Amino acid sequence: METLNNNWIICYHILMKLNPSNIRFIVILLVLYVCAIGTSANADTPPSIPDNKGVKSAIQELFADAPQMISIAQCESGFRQYTAKGTTFTGSGGQYVGVFQISKGHTSNAKKMGFDIYTLEGNLGFAKYLYNKQGVQPWRGCVKTAPTSKTKTALLTKSMGIGTNHPEVMTLQKILNSAGFFVARSGPGSPNNETTVFDSKTLDALKRFQCIHNIACRGTADTTGYGYVGPLTRAALLKAAKEQGL
Image (cartoon, rainbow, N blue to C red; front, side, top):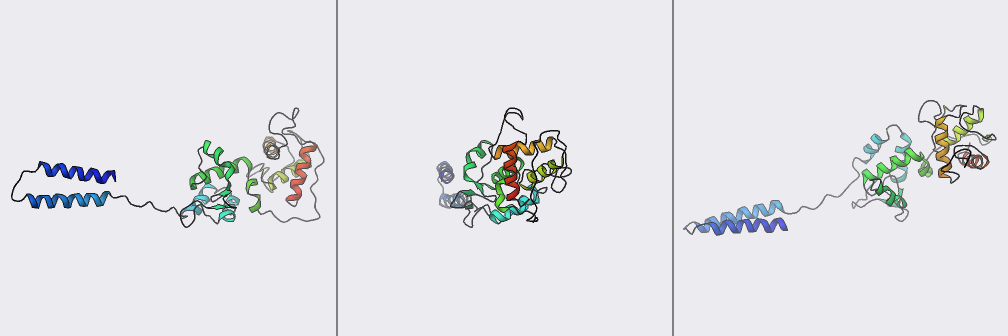
Protein backbone atom coordinates (compact mmCIF):
# COMPACT_ATOMS: atom_id res chain seq x y z
CA MET A 1 0.00 0.00 0.00
CA GLU A 2 2.90 2.37 0.68
CA THR A 3 4.06 1.95 -2.94
CA LEU A 4 0.56 2.75 -4.22
CA ASN A 5 0.34 5.95 -2.17
CA ASN A 6 3.76 7.07 -3.43
CA ASN A 7 2.64 6.59 -7.04
CA TRP A 8 -0.42 8.81 -6.55
CA ILE A 9 1.60 11.48 -4.74
CA ILE A 10 4.05 11.63 -7.65
CA CYS A 11 1.17 11.90 -10.11
CA TYR A 12 -0.43 14.65 -8.06
CA HIS A 13 2.74 16.75 -8.11
CA ILE A 14 3.00 16.29 -11.87
CA LEU A 15 -0.55 17.55 -12.30
CA MET A 16 0.06 20.59 -10.11
CA LYS A 17 3.05 21.64 -12.20
CA LEU A 18 1.12 21.61 -15.46
CA ASN A 19 0.11 25.00 -16.91
CA PRO A 20 -3.60 25.58 -17.75
CA SER A 21 -4.41 25.14 -21.42
CA ASN A 22 -7.03 23.83 -23.73
CA ILE A 23 -5.50 20.36 -23.64
CA ARG A 24 -5.12 20.21 -19.86
CA PHE A 25 -8.06 17.83 -19.55
CA ILE A 26 -6.46 15.42 -22.00
CA VAL A 27 -3.14 15.62 -20.19
CA ILE A 28 -4.84 14.90 -16.89
CA LEU A 29 -6.44 11.80 -18.37
CA LEU A 30 -3.09 10.63 -19.73
CA VAL A 31 -1.35 11.17 -16.39
CA LEU A 32 -4.11 9.32 -14.53
CA TYR A 33 -3.82 6.45 -17.01
CA VAL A 34 -0.05 6.21 -16.48
CA CYS A 35 -0.54 6.29 -12.71
CA ALA A 36 -3.13 3.53 -12.95
CA ILE A 37 -0.66 1.36 -14.88
CA GLY A 38 2.03 2.02 -12.29
CA THR A 39 -0.39 1.19 -9.50
CA SER A 40 -1.32 -2.10 -11.12
CA ALA A 41 2.32 -3.06 -11.77
CA ASN A 42 3.32 -2.36 -8.17
CA ALA A 43 0.36 -4.15 -6.57
CA ASP A 44 1.40 -6.86 -4.15
CA THR A 45 1.19 -10.38 -5.55
CA PRO A 46 0.30 -13.29 -3.27
CA PRO A 47 3.29 -15.36 -2.13
CA SER A 48 3.77 -18.74 -3.78
CA ILE A 49 2.87 -21.81 -1.76
CA PRO A 50 5.88 -24.04 -0.94
CA ASP A 51 5.68 -27.49 -2.50
CA ASN A 52 7.70 -30.68 -2.52
CA LYS A 53 9.14 -30.39 -6.02
CA GLY A 54 12.84 -31.08 -5.89
CA VAL A 55 12.79 -32.50 -2.35
CA LYS A 56 13.77 -36.01 -3.41
CA SER A 57 16.55 -34.82 -5.72
CA ALA A 58 17.93 -32.55 -2.96
CA ILE A 59 18.08 -35.52 -0.56
CA GLN A 60 19.69 -37.73 -3.18
CA GLU A 61 22.38 -35.12 -3.78
CA LEU A 62 23.07 -34.45 -0.10
CA PHE A 63 23.19 -38.13 0.86
CA ALA A 64 24.73 -39.54 -2.30
CA ASP A 65 27.20 -41.46 -0.13
CA ALA A 66 24.52 -42.65 2.31
CA PRO A 67 21.68 -44.33 0.38
CA GLN A 68 20.18 -45.55 3.64
CA MET A 69 19.28 -41.94 4.50
CA ILE A 70 17.39 -41.61 1.21
CA SER A 71 15.33 -44.66 2.15
CA ILE A 72 14.78 -43.18 5.62
CA ALA A 73 13.40 -39.94 4.13
CA GLN A 74 10.95 -41.94 2.05
CA CYS A 75 9.96 -44.02 5.08
CA GLU A 76 9.56 -41.06 7.43
CA SER A 77 7.64 -38.63 5.21
CA GLY A 78 7.40 -39.88 1.65
CA PHE A 79 9.84 -37.09 0.70
CA ARG A 80 7.48 -34.41 2.06
CA GLN A 81 8.61 -31.22 3.77
CA TYR A 82 5.32 -29.40 3.14
CA THR A 83 1.62 -30.21 3.09
CA ALA A 84 -0.67 -29.44 0.16
CA LYS A 85 -1.50 -26.12 1.87
CA GLY A 86 2.16 -25.14 2.05
CA THR A 87 2.53 -25.64 5.80
CA THR A 88 5.35 -27.71 7.27
CA PHE A 89 4.60 -31.42 7.29
CA THR A 90 4.51 -32.84 10.83
CA GLY A 91 3.79 -36.23 12.37
CA SER A 92 2.69 -37.71 15.69
CA GLY A 93 0.55 -34.73 16.59
CA GLY A 94 3.16 -32.19 15.58
CA GLN A 95 6.00 -33.72 17.58
CA TYR A 96 8.11 -34.57 14.53
CA VAL A 97 8.94 -32.10 11.79
CA GLY A 98 9.62 -32.17 8.07
CA VAL A 99 11.01 -34.63 5.58
CA PHE A 100 13.25 -36.37 8.13
CA GLN A 101 10.65 -36.12 10.93
CA ILE A 102 13.09 -34.48 13.32
CA SER A 103 11.89 -34.27 16.91
CA LYS A 104 10.43 -30.89 17.83
CA GLY A 105 12.68 -30.98 20.90
CA HIS A 106 15.67 -30.29 18.63
CA THR A 107 14.24 -26.96 17.42
CA SER A 108 16.16 -24.70 19.82
CA ASN A 109 19.56 -26.39 19.46
CA ALA A 110 19.11 -26.60 15.70
CA LYS A 111 18.45 -22.85 15.47
CA LYS A 112 21.59 -22.13 17.49
CA MET A 113 23.49 -24.06 14.83
CA GLY A 114 21.79 -22.14 12.03
CA PHE A 115 19.22 -24.79 11.07
CA ASP A 116 15.48 -24.09 10.93
CA ILE A 117 13.99 -27.59 10.81
CA TYR A 118 10.68 -26.14 9.56
CA THR A 119 12.35 -25.30 6.23
CA LEU A 120 13.65 -27.83 3.72
CA GLU A 121 17.23 -26.56 3.88
CA GLY A 122 17.26 -26.55 7.67
CA ASN A 123 15.64 -29.97 7.98
CA LEU A 124 18.12 -31.57 5.61
CA GLY A 125 21.06 -29.73 7.16
CA PHE A 126 20.24 -30.83 10.70
CA ALA A 127 19.54 -34.38 9.50
CA LYS A 128 23.04 -34.40 8.00
CA TYR A 129 24.44 -33.20 11.32
CA LEU A 130 22.62 -35.95 13.24
CA TYR A 131 23.76 -38.56 10.71
CA ASN A 132 27.40 -37.53 11.00
CA LYS A 133 27.14 -37.61 14.79
CA GLN A 134 24.91 -40.63 15.45
CA GLY A 135 24.58 -42.51 12.18
CA VAL A 136 21.05 -43.77 11.47
CA GLN A 137 20.25 -44.27 15.16
CA PRO A 138 17.73 -41.37 15.35
CA TRP A 139 15.66 -43.09 12.64
CA ARG A 140 16.02 -46.70 13.81
CA GLY A 141 12.30 -47.28 13.23
CA CYS A 142 12.91 -46.90 9.49
CA VAL A 143 16.22 -48.77 9.35
CA LYS A 144 16.13 -52.13 7.66
CA THR A 145 18.61 -54.68 8.94
CA ALA A 146 19.76 -57.74 7.11
CA PRO A 147 18.13 -60.97 8.29
CA THR A 148 20.37 -63.14 10.46
CA SER A 149 20.13 -66.62 11.88
CA LYS A 150 18.01 -66.77 15.02
CA THR A 151 20.32 -69.36 16.49
CA LYS A 152 23.36 -67.12 16.18
CA THR A 153 24.17 -64.99 19.23
CA ALA A 154 26.85 -62.30 19.41
CA LEU A 155 29.75 -63.30 21.63
CA LEU A 156 31.22 -60.47 23.63
CA THR A 157 33.01 -61.42 26.84
CA LYS A 158 36.30 -59.57 26.70
CA SER A 159 37.12 -56.10 28.04
CA MET A 160 38.64 -54.11 25.20
CA GLY A 161 40.26 -50.79 24.50
CA ILE A 162 42.41 -49.00 21.94
CA GLY A 163 45.07 -51.32 20.57
CA THR A 164 43.26 -54.59 21.34
CA ASN A 165 43.66 -57.20 18.59
CA HIS A 166 41.14 -59.98 19.14
CA PRO A 167 38.33 -61.75 17.22
CA GLU A 168 35.77 -60.15 19.55
CA VAL A 169 36.74 -56.71 18.20
CA MET A 170 35.14 -57.83 14.95
CA THR A 171 31.95 -58.60 16.88
CA LEU A 172 32.16 -55.18 18.54
CA GLN A 173 32.46 -53.46 15.17
CA LYS A 174 29.54 -55.46 13.75
CA ILE A 175 27.32 -54.43 16.65
CA LEU A 176 28.29 -50.78 16.32
CA ASN A 177 27.73 -50.78 12.55
CA SER A 178 24.38 -52.56 12.82
CA ALA A 179 23.19 -50.10 15.48
CA GLY A 180 24.05 -47.13 13.27
CA PHE A 181 27.31 -46.10 14.98
CA PHE A 182 29.47 -46.75 11.96
CA VAL A 183 33.12 -47.54 12.52
CA ALA A 184 33.79 -46.56 8.90
CA ARG A 185 31.70 -45.71 5.85
CA SER A 186 33.86 -47.78 3.55
CA GLY A 187 36.99 -49.91 3.71
CA PRO A 188 38.28 -51.62 6.88
CA GLY A 189 35.78 -51.41 9.72
CA SER A 190 32.78 -50.65 7.50
CA PRO A 191 29.72 -52.96 7.35
CA ASN A 192 30.76 -56.43 6.11
CA ASN A 193 34.41 -55.33 6.33
CA GLU A 194 34.88 -55.49 10.10
CA THR A 195 38.35 -56.19 11.48
CA THR A 196 39.89 -57.64 14.63
CA VAL A 197 41.79 -54.44 15.48
CA PHE A 198 40.46 -51.89 17.99
CA ASP A 199 41.70 -48.74 16.22
CA SER A 200 40.90 -45.04 16.50
CA LYS A 201 37.80 -45.42 14.29
CA THR A 202 36.48 -48.14 16.57
CA LEU A 203 37.20 -45.91 19.54
CA ASP A 204 35.25 -43.02 18.04
CA ALA A 205 32.23 -45.22 17.21
CA LEU A 206 32.26 -46.74 20.69
CA LYS A 207 32.37 -43.30 22.33
CA ARG A 208 29.35 -42.20 20.31
CA PHE A 209 27.52 -45.36 21.40
CA GLN A 210 28.41 -44.81 25.07
CA CYS A 211 27.36 -41.17 24.99
CA ILE A 212 23.97 -41.83 23.38
CA HIS A 213 23.28 -44.66 25.86
CA ASN A 214 24.26 -42.47 28.83
CA ILE A 215 27.12 -44.76 29.85
CA ALA A 216 29.89 -42.17 29.58
CA CYS A 217 30.35 -39.03 27.55
CA ARG A 218 33.58 -37.58 28.93
CA GLY A 219 36.71 -38.57 30.78
CA THR A 220 39.06 -41.39 29.83
CA ALA A 221 39.12 -45.18 29.76
CA ASP A 222 40.78 -45.15 33.19
CA THR A 223 38.57 -42.53 34.86
CA THR A 224 35.06 -43.08 33.50
CA GLY A 225 35.45 -45.99 31.09
CA TYR A 226 34.89 -43.64 28.15
CA GLY A 227 36.18 -45.43 25.05
CA TYR A 228 36.60 -48.78 26.82
CA VAL A 229 34.47 -51.92 26.73
CA GLY A 230 33.85 -52.77 30.36
CA PRO A 231 30.93 -54.66 31.99
CA LEU A 232 28.37 -51.83 31.67
CA THR A 233 29.23 -51.03 28.06
CA ARG A 234 29.38 -54.72 27.17
CA ALA A 235 25.86 -55.25 28.55
CA ALA A 236 24.54 -52.32 26.46
CA LEU A 237 26.31 -53.64 23.37
CA LEU A 238 24.82 -57.12 23.81
CA LYS A 239 21.37 -55.59 24.24
CA ALA A 240 21.86 -53.64 21.00
CA ALA A 241 23.07 -56.82 19.28
CA LYS A 242 19.90 -58.62 20.35
CA GLU A 243 17.74 -55.79 19.04
CA GLN A 244 19.55 -55.96 15.71
CA GLY A 245 19.20 -59.75 15.53
CA LEU A 246 22.92 -60.43 15.84
